[in-house]
Amino acid sequence: MSLKQTALAISDYRAALAYAACLTRAGAEVTARPGATGVPRISTDRRPSQCREPSGTADPRTQQDLDALRPCESEQPIAACLQRVFNERVGATAPPRLEIRLGFRNESPPTLATAPTVAVAVGVALAVILGALLLSRAVLHPVRAMTLAAKELGEGDLARRVPVSGRDEIAQLGGAFNRMADSLQAGEERQRRLTGDIAHELRTPLANLRGYLEALRDGVVEPTPELLASLHEEALLQQRVVDDLQDLALAEAGALTYHPVAVDLRDLLEAGRTAHRAQAEAAGVALELQAPGPVIVTADPDRLRQVVGNLVGNALRATAAGGTVTLALLPQDLAQGEPAVAEMEIRDTGRGISAGDLPHLFDRFWRADASRGRATGGSGLGLSIARQIVTDHRGTIEVRSEVGVGTTFRVSLPAVPDGVGGSGASRAAGTSGASGAG
Image 1 (tube, one colour):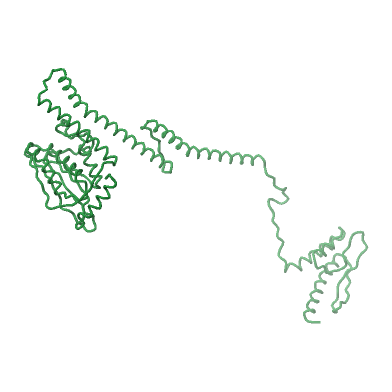
Image 2 (cartoon, rainbow, N blue to C red):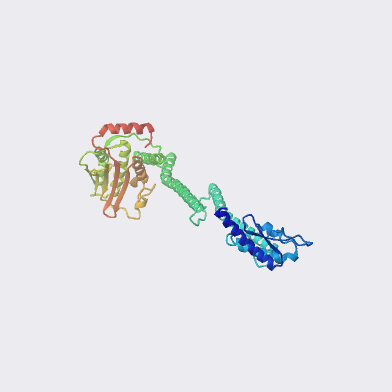
């Protein structure tokens, strides 16, 4: 027999001795017989009993064999002894039994209470419904208010606004709606004011013309050459107001036709000085030109002459006898990387304009001196037309004034770079002429 077999036989013998000792203490009869290997084998004889008895083997190997040793209550001590010996044998190799208990020992299984469960479910449902109502109110109420405001705005209530609170998307939409309503209201007010201004400008001269014509028809007034000349001049003034209104409407609508070509601003200012020389001499005002050299721009010469004529005419009317009106062409600022800009100024030594009146200077039918009428103060549309023409030429017009010192209008236009000259101007003229609008 090998050494391994001998070690196993000795281990079985020791285990059998432990079971035999347990059985002996429990009152069972134990017999030892020599085995095939010479090691005694322990067994117990079956005893007569009405209950099932063990199989007779004193060395149970499994839990099933151990359960077979528990036939009835009379053999409970033997079964308990064998269970203890079995636990001692397998304790070194088997893990401890895992027991998990919930609640208290011998406690009845927990049951789910109906009333609290229903209460919790109802509370959760009410909270969800309340949250949905609040959310829908927070979102739909501003939208509903904006819909109503848009409907009333479309029906003509331009003063309608929506309340705005917060910084979310709904608040931003409400702010955009209010800004749109402000723009519409401002445009409506400008149109209403323009209509009133036109009616005011035309009412008095037309009433005068009507009165004189009726007097001539009735023979109350003699048709002298002086009277006819005066009536003709009044009709020409009304025609000028109508023409200015048409030009301004076309310019603001972007429908005013321009024919851009290469224009020398020095020649343009010289032409303006020549055209107003007689008016300046009659008013006793010196009309000077300061233009050191040619400056070329691409523009419509007729429209620019209209701008210069409006500015020079206003300057002559604002300057008393002995004053000076200067048409100046400023030197070009040819900074590196900056686009070339041509600048011309119309300066006068007249009465000037107060700082509070400067923001209204380009408004329609506005005059700094309310006592001046159309015969002495123009139609009140010249500066509005001049600004729109300059803007259409991608330029700017600015004004500086000081009461008692004088006023300066500066017009800035994109200049043609040196060396480009007529070819660049011709290309620009062809492109703009095809479009028909500046």
